[in-house]
Length: 105
Image (cartoon, rainbow, N blue to C red):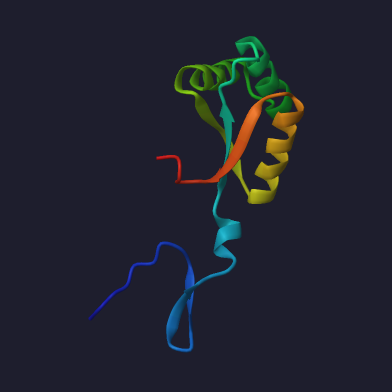
């Protein structure tokens, strides 16, 4: 008996297994905030508290990760919601990008 292991939902079409087109929409996306030479650490923490509603402790921990590691996954969500967060971070003057969850090995 043979079994196949799929990495994402799929369906069989004309005898072949094809990826489910809705799977990409269901996959969580990460908001990555990057370290930059411009913004003060206190400002980055302030943005995380103000925009995301994080506690001071959580905002400071994420800010320190950005500062020491160069980047931090600040939040996850649907592609559309994370894209909105990227635009908001750019509005605040922070460097931010989006990536699929699981790609930040």
